[in-house]
Amino acid sequence: MRRIVRLGLFDAAYHRNRTTAAALSVAGAVFRDVHFPVLETIGDRLAPSRDAAALLAMAWRFALGEMRLAPRACSAIVWAQDLLFGYPGHWDIVGWAPLARRLGRRVLFDPLVTLTETFIEDRRLVAPGTVRARLIRWLDRLALRAADVILADTPQQAASWAALAGVPLSRFAVLPVGADERLFDPARRMQAGGRGDDLDCLRVLFYGTYSPLHGAETIVEAVHRLERAGERLAVVMIGTGQCEAAVRARAAEAGLRTITFVPWVPEHELPNWIAWADVVLGIFGATAKAARVVPNKVYQAMAMASAIVTRDSPALRWLADGEEIALLVPPADADALAAALRTLRSPARRTVLAQAARARFEAVASDRARASRLRPLLDPSRPETGGARP
Image 1: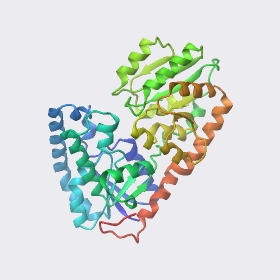
Image 2: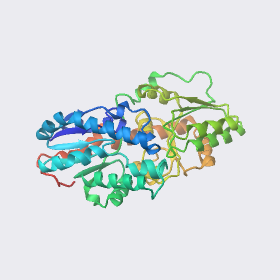
Image 3: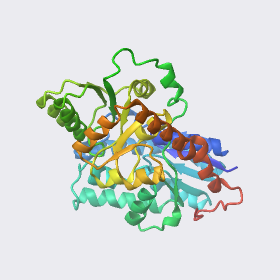
């Protein structure tokens, strides 16, 4: 099998990087990390989009990190057949791909998201058409064009990135995000025990970073409708982020009694919350990015055999492939979300949905299933020289 080095300043703890590494290992790759931690030490990663001084400080930290990485990186490139640049590795791939290609190594890129969709389209932290927006788009294009193989989590993302960078779709391989199966195990639901005496109270869970993608304000409006109708429910919203203050303010303004806001919790605690919930909520944003992605939380809830409600999208329908693995509602539609939650008061309905979600996870998003997607890329007969396409 092929020798792969994952190289750079990527966030080693990030979910996508861990699940891709797990799939590569199951597929039989000989896998090494050559990493220097920079991103893990930065608190507010969005600050450079708002402040020039923060941008310069981050650039300086990246430059120092690459210099410290260089002695190990050079020997690793000599050993490797493939170099993998993980999330968020735009600067890494632009810097190291020329040397890798000169040495005949294949360059793989697993960006998860582009900087354009994060800072300009979804979070709207940088105005389109500005100098910073043009620089961000330029870096995205350089990074995507530097790769021989680009891993995208959905076909919709692959098509969007191909158009952004002007590269052919043949350069892309689709690899679902998946979940850490050691953590998100359906057995955790059984270990959580019974529901106690209050069987009539529907327990609903949301967790996320409160970006526009998540559409958390739609959740608050749906809960408002349910409370006014006298529905009994307990809603927990976990996380911090860009839209959190506005969401909390709206919940306070509406006088909602059933929502409990919890600051971000360590990932290893999330399975306990999922096991507690009757229903796990996905995303409800109306942004273009929200239509192209399937978020971590949906895969994690699928892995744990949970009943899920999330927005309808081409990406989710691609993942489901005709199976009903979640209740789908239009984006930013609080009435539809409230109606879906009423439907899931039925334990039998939740069970059918949860079992379908778990079966679909095993078929397409488990480590085993994702490894099968990667094996053609790891074929020993595949050329080692840069320029090989999937």
